[in-house]
Length: 227
Image (tube, helix red, strand yellow):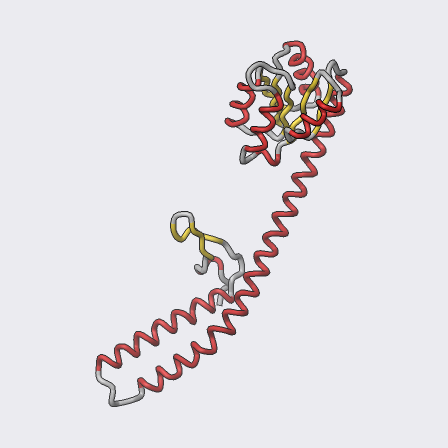
């Protein structure tokens, strides 16, 4: 797993590098908060470990910025603090961190915290995948209900329109202009009927861009069942 770690203490960075290497993580080390924030913006990582006290941007401020980033909701942030008081814990949680560890800490304790973070990240991934599948299932169900409603509300009046147009075409008293207008009505009504049929045969509903920033349901032949 990719990990971003920031601490201005070279000893702390050395310890973290050793623990992360032992756990087979791909770690990026930064010496201060500003460098960590820049690194995260370039390449967001699923796990970020931040020392609470760093020159420039401290760990809490970097954590806040990560949470405001478009990819920050899915990031596990672990804060390393030198104190274990109630006020410090409150500040850590208010900044949006998921967990914290006090220093000095042992490699065993640090390893345990990182394993907890790894499991949480895996669980969150499973949850997000399930939520995405549920959302798509609901979307597909909504399309199915919409299709039935459209068939019911459009086909009946459309059939009546086509029937009356055919009857009028049988009138020998129509001039050429009137006949042409009736042909146009028949053609356009037939196009509407074809759209409704394609909608009813959707097998893999997808969206396509209609205008800049606007999407529409793709009713092309590749998304509909064969006749």
